Image 1 (tube, rainbow, N blue to C red):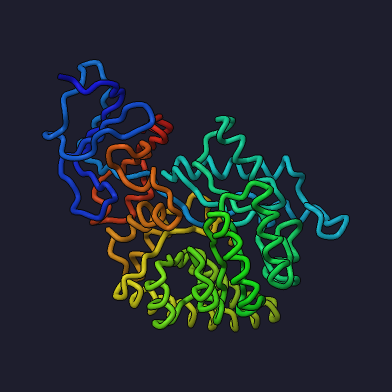
Image 2 (cartoon, one colour):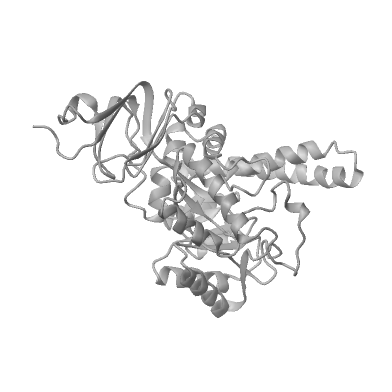
Length: 409
């Protein structure tokens, strides 16, 4: 008897379901409405009605939809014409909210077309991303599913405080609790805190994390440089962003089931930009770039060592692009981040998990991240075996989101 309600079947030469097992040869995924009802060997699939729409990819690999864990769709300061505007009054938005929202929408559509079916916005200009998310839910434009944090919570004068209406500045444990409550009131799905080195105190960070967790919200923490990583882990954040944690910090993160988002690609691109600026004809720029170049090279070496130990210790890593914090990082750069993970020693299968299952697990998103019965039907296809060539993740040929085909080449 044919399986009822199935409306779409996808066949591929290979299936990676995101559950961590061996890939399946001659795989099949069956979808009913928004949900997966079967994912596995084609020969073991239940029968389907003859009229069910079927997509055959005889040379492709099917995978879960990708999750970008660190994006900034509303960052507009690096747009080519941003310098044509003035801050008047001081710290006011340069672009209008409508312009920023349109920039964000265009970037998010690019990300979806690259296979990113879910994205975590880790810091918004003003409250604009809440409206962008509402518009995406109404299908006003094509977009990944969005988790939005609102403004970055920082101490007075902290990380990026000078950017217009980007941060929620607070002081003292109660001030940080209030800032968390303000972002939750505005509609935040999770909380983003930033700590560069030791901008804030451990007591402030502990209070913010406790307040978010008290409301059953996850916390991501920007950890630019030591001791920020240790402080974040001590506070029991859910994910810590950037950095190069020590072996001791990694061991503690594993013990506390905390996840690391290393954001390699953006660091590499910044390093390359310093390499170019070393040759600048302006001596002041060249001198500054020389210092930054040496510092960034050391940082990348430390990050590589951290990743090697993280793999050994069992620390879960996720894939985040940090788009758009560097003008050389394209917004749809998750494939670049996966490639960087592999170049830094992460096995391809774990790089794929970093962009799928591990990402979903870190945020408690039970309906996405894998292809298995009952999960939302988020799926991509790439033309070949990404375990043999992770670069194929940059050649997405099929994107299905919530059971709907949004890209089919």
